[in-house]
Image (tube, rainbow, N blue to C red; front, side):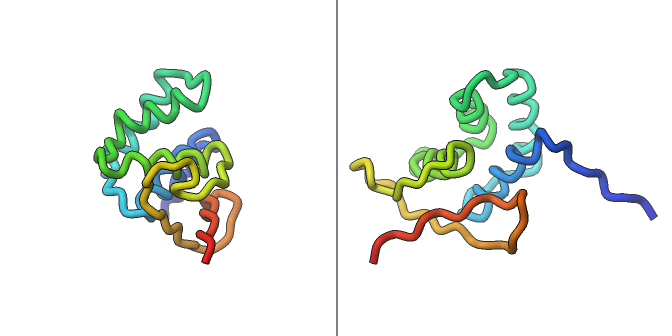
Length: 114
């Protein structure tokens, strides 16, 4: 019986971001996740914008979903709490699905006002 390899702690935030994108309907292949991690390692991200750009280049969100990608990025990496469309843009509403509790789970998006 072999033990499942553990993900390095430094990579967890990046892999959980990919999981967050997938939960929200982004089609991301395992090879893209690997490329995303390699790009981050290569860049030695100095700031969040480096990470965002690495994701744009390797995870390739379609043009019509870039607003949703940016919103999820802000929520996941910057702790952004703003609602879609709050800044005047016509971003699509993103629904985050809760998949149990745990410290490595992506955060939930705020609920839109009723």
